[in-house]
Amino acid sequence: MTHFLFSFETVTGLPEFVAFIFIFLLGAIIGSFLNVVIHRIPLDQSIVFPNSACPNCKNPIKSFDNIPIFSWLILAGKCRNCKNPISPRYPAVEFLTGLSFLLVYWQIGLNWYLPVCLIFTSSIISLIFIDAEHMILPDKITIPLFIFAVIVRIVFPVFTQTDFFPDMGHYPLISMNDSPAWLVSLLGAGLGALIGGGSLWLVGEIWQRLRGVEAMGFGDVKMLLGVGALLGWRLTLLTIFLGALTGSVVGIYYIAKDRENGLQAKLPFGIFLGLGSVIALLFGERLIVWYLATFVPQ
Image (cartoon, rainbow, N blue to C red):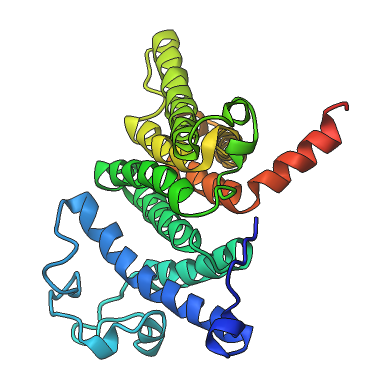
């Protein structure tokens, strides 16, 4: 899915590789902020105040020690004051966010939808790392993500071209060509959210009634509400499939590694749903077309 409405070289007069450098650096800077989000939101702390500080000695981090990726490398992963180790998660998040921004720009192109995809990807990265560390998907991220997705689905058909939302070209939305585009898009958001959050809730409810054990938390359901609202029902189903597939592979690994306790291991499913949602955003339509052409009789 690439929609180059603008050319970076035409707009700025600079070669395209400058855009890739800029978008990576922007991603690394955003990743630095995401580290604050990942650390503070599970602790119910403000993400604005106070300034970043060493978690060990509590000394504020100087601006020259807060350069994404490079500061951690220059300081050899240690605090300048107390010399205690600083988690490698910090440069990892910064590098991963920069890399993700590059990938999004490469696939989406330079257009009005690019900031939406970057915000979506940033939210997913935050959820992935929070779920990995705390096994929670906070409402402070999942609920705003859902609201953001709904607003985007209403606003974009009014002010921009609507082909950013591929579900509008498929059943049942394609049968509503006579309706206003924003309404069709909004209904698509509702259908995607229903299939995303609703299907996970239903699976969890059935599992709990059959086994008496909670299969997944409501954080996964709320996360899929936002994913479904933005991506639509087709890409949301792909997200769930990819999440279940990758989660199953990791689960099998744990079982093979520890046969006694592997079945009891709790996997943070939000990690796999997050990965699936980004893959669906960037490559989903092509994956669906390939699957239908390869495995579904014509």
